[in-house]
Image (cartoon, rainbow, N blue to C red; front, side, top):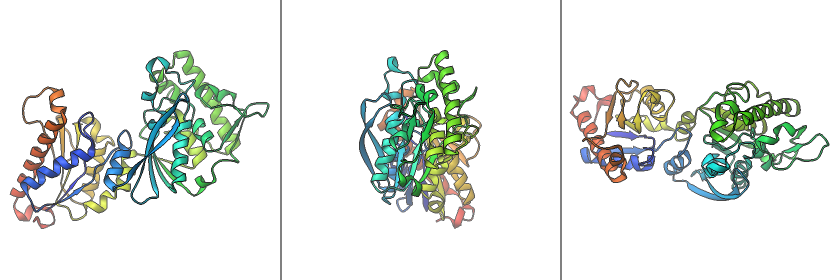
Length: 384
């Protein structure tokens, strides 16, 4: 019996890697001879670097970069086992948690550190980069990132502007990309972007996300006007018309910056992850796929990790079961959806790592025992 285990993390409790091993323990308790393929996955957001590093036996690389307000921070990116693919979470360098609540002001924050992470990956020989852009503290349109990669932003008198932030975009009279890192031309950047916000306007980066980054209503208007001006400069000076591209407003407009300066593609995060891990190839010949996340609810069906795994399984004709700590009624898209919780428990108790591991293992054991009870003729690929 071949079982592919491809869960997301159970946030606040277990990493995807830990979930995999707990489920594998249960599978082997039911069938010691089972072939178990472990594929910890993620949706391109928090935890993606760790999941892909774990799944490919890669490594984490530490780099000192500028944080959102310019102070040094130690960030990490993932170097996958092929030695050519880097996985970067912009939040590691430019994320909101790096800014104390009292200091949050997107007029003053920059994505410069994210650009430094990209440069560090290029220095390691990586030419395939996967970049997750959730959780930003910034609203600079990716100008800081581009600055770290060699772009120059000039004032009306032709002098270079200082560190680019959300509040300086309106000052940009010209963008000079002639000194942009030439290695970008030979690199492929896939950006995990699961929002469709435009760069500016009522549904743009500043209006939708600015307030949670510390922007007052007046700041939002300033930031939005700056992004609109910046979009015109990108179009005029770089020939990059990003104003109406869905997702350009992601991460305070970092989506637009990655498109304009790096030739990146904006894609659904879970699709990038599943492609990178070759989940379709691993599912071939399987008898069962088990996925899961902390809460399986209506959001699961809308592009989250488990639904992406289920689509791959269905395409291969393999049954798929989702395990969750909490399961909402009426969830479709899976052959079965089960809660791992086997007794009345407070949320904090259920999330305690050792208990969560034990419950996951027990739930997975029961799933496999039930599958083994099915008549041989009803099992995919002839069963055992």
